[in-house]
Length: 639
Ligand code: ADP
Image (cartoon, rainbow, N blue to C red; front, side, top):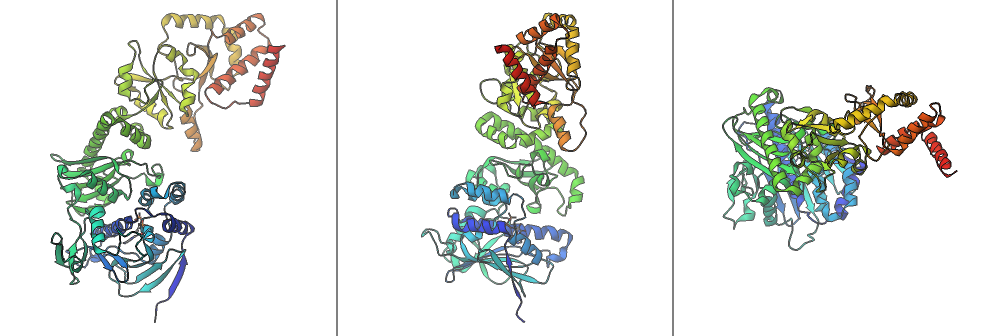
């Protein structure tokens, strides 16, 4: 009986993606090989990992796992075969018929928006590696059998919107991806040439931990390749060196090799921003080769992907990818590998969570990464600023959530500032502080331009004090948790009392408050519910009034966050601070002196409160009423 062939349609996104792959991406087509070899290597990793708990998946413990390339120049077919985990029918349909990743839409959008030549760097990042085969192939056939199952499957597609699926008997375990190549477009690069494939493997996939082999018959002239007889009897040449990059001495490794390895582990196309490679001895013995990426992944803040992306090896054997126990979530942008010399090989996730050796590695690796970031900040400022734009908000999660590294993390922060020379660190800020300055002044808000014009800055700027302008949503918590830096308190200018008003000025203001108590009470009465209290103050020099949070009141972002997450926010307590020297406030004082019952006092009150709200970028409670009052004022002024 011939097996039944089904025809299925690709998910719309896949169809669109394939259209773009086939019709717009012409450069860097060779990356298809790296992508397919990476998938094969991942499949072998997964098999090895599953076999830890199900040893029957590997026929015998010593089984040799490998990746095999086959090429037939006469029919222009290339295939990549692995004896890894394989896929069953459902996995095949899900993995190679849809794009599970929620970022696909974004990927497609970026692809459409960019020049086609820029596109390859986006490919791996969005997990569409397999589909890159359609850049070079007219037809792709995938034959696969999942480890531990008997039925095999043949998937086939021309990349034109549909694929066929049929059951296939007698397939070996694992997967073979066969490409019927398009005619070569470039005389210098024909993927049906064994020498070309061998060169691409050397270039992109040398450090793959499994042998990548091809029939030795293709390489009769090459004495440099290791040749052997594979278990199926074929004489094969090994194309990769099998020496994991991290196990080699640093001095021997070129920047190019590091970058290629980075691309192998991340599936990205760009270069890493920083490479951190060291061997730890003494406590836990391990080697780490981790990278700070230069691009920000699209899903950095996606709650479902807040995982560390560092793989764990034990004595060069892959144990698990995305090992959360190796780096804290606030370093989740770090990519790479850790190879331990003293952990047990058959570790499960449950064991890992309690493993002391691993906890030590995490602690030590965290320190090393922070030290490398510190060095980057000092020696390569532009790169560090780029890093911070991409990942600074993630580092800040560490300040909020963790006490241990808080001071180190604080010194890595970059802030916008009122100081002229661009973004600053806290260390630089402290070095620039005025002799009489008691605190690090900060102002938190949504928009840098608005903050720079905020009335809250007036008195501090008049004194010549620098102010940090914080616009990340998390900054309010950062300031609250950090409290101080190098013994200097962090003081938000829109909260509590100012610490730089001198005593004479303070008692002068208190005197004025006593003198105008009834006016202040009248204003307070009018604004009851909107503000907690009204007072005179020295926070502004040019604005008549400003709103200030009471010392322990919940802040603006916190209040909004609680509201957005459906939680009840404690009432935000704010004071309206009037500048007794401002002509408008002086006018209000006069009005009250002449006639404490004057209805204009109430109008002034509403206008002053409205102005203070507008100046900080907050909405007005009743904009219609406010504009009517302004109109009235204007008419009064022109009458
Ligand atoms: P990515 O590898 O980035 O996840 P791909 O489109 O290359 O994206 O592959 C999609 C999925 O298909 C993989 O995550 C994997 O589950 C499965 N897959 C691809 N190639 C193989 C293979 N050789 N063996 C087993 N599974 C594979």
